[in-house]
Structure formats: C-alpha cells, structure tokens
Length: 321
View (cartoon, rainbow, N blue to C red):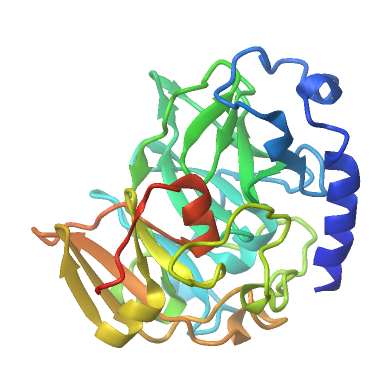
C-alpha cells in the first residue's frame, strides 16, 4: 500500500488547490470548461499522474488463445464476445497499468475500460454522433473513479457511468456493451479459437499489482463520500445492472439469482487482481454471468459498493430480504 499512501499525499496536495478549472486550462487548452454538468469542481481531484501519465492503448496486438503464454488459469480477463468475429480477452494484468484499450471489434470502435480504484470494468461503443472517438486517461478522479477524455473534442467523461461531464460532450452517455470479467481458463476453454491481447510494448511490470491489499483495506483510496447503506462494506463487490446492485456475497451463497428480469449466475475460479502482489495470486472472488430472461448477455459492471452508492445514491440494493 506504500504507492497508494504516496499518491494520496500527492493528490491531496495537487487537488486541494484545484477546486475550479482555471488551474487546468494550460494542460487542457481545447477543453470547453464553460460547459459542464458538474455543480462543484472540488469533486474532481488529481489521482497523481497527469494527463496521459497512465497511457491508454490503441489498436492492440491480438494473438490466438493457443499462442498466448504467461497467463495463469485463475487470473482475470475482460471478455467481449461480438455477434460476428472471434471472442476477445483483455487481461487485467495489462489494464491495471493502462486503464483504457481503444480497439475495433467487428468493424465497431470500442473502448475497453478498467478503473482499479472502483474495480469498474466497462466496455463502451466509441462511436458518438457518427464520430469514432479515441479515449485517454485525464489523471483526474471523481469519487475515486477514473475521469476519461476523448482525443477528438477533449471532453471529459465519467468512466463508471459513461457520461460526458465536461466540454462539448457534456450530457452525452456512451452506449455500454455486454462484457464481463472472468478467469483466463474460463475464457480459453469456451473460446479455443478466440483472441487475447498480447503484452504491450510499454515498460511496465506486467503481472504485478500496484494496489496490493486494496480491496481488503478499510477505506477506498481518495474517497470522501458516504459509505453504502445497510452496513455494506464499501469495498464489497456488487454486480450493477442499471441502477440496481446485487452484493457478490449474496450471489456467492445463492449460486444463481433470478429477479427483476435478470439472471445472475456465480461460480468460483477468478482471482482478485487487487489483492496479492501478483495479479494472478489474489484470493478467489468468483465470477458472474449476467443475462436477461431470454438468455442474452446484459451490459453490467462488477464494482465496489462505495462507487455504486456514490454514482447511484438513489439506486436499489438487491439484498434478497
């Protein structure tokens, strides 16, 4: 947790004097700060690295499942199974260092995103108003969640919600595509002809977790909001579908839950990427598949409870009581 303590001090020093956008204009000269849905600029703070200090990836190299080496069976990947073309897996050992992968799948531009601090893994359709957008990392946080930006208009976007919050794209919501986190073994066994992202060329200690012990810590990193209701631990994973959240602890006990037009099935076998020093060695936190009543995969997120409460304060907690 040493890196988190260092970044916390850095971010508080940097963010404490940036309660309005004036200090950001030199770094973001093309961003229209006069257009925003934010009521209070103090909610946005520096996460430590500056603009593109966490380098998003574009057009990643993909290899066949049989060619991929170095992944452990239980380590997590983000799976995208398009209607046409092979399924694709994006290992968290890479996304934990890059947070955004801009790709094209079946002729459709997509943004595969992962915010480690919220454990939020969402894939967005990157075509907005007929224009293909490419996303990067601002280095800013809001409710501990990554603030993205698009390179075309330099508008800022909230990763957890997919909403434009600053600039030309304010008020626009990105379409969320069905994708999910599962173990490498689960993906490979189901998709032997699938594709998996190759190791990026950046100099990073891929396979190492820079947030050791984060998902068992007492408080979220750089979060000053309310804790979730009902006595739910802020760092418990929840499955979010729309504005409803199912605690993973409930799903692990039930195995399968069918309610509100949703079927959520849980099984063991996926390691937490935010636990042990090695991404693949984290404790087993299980994996879910979310489908509608017709058996079709549904867009969803598996995020920490504090983040759901922060962005959906009036959301419904599916506690099964």
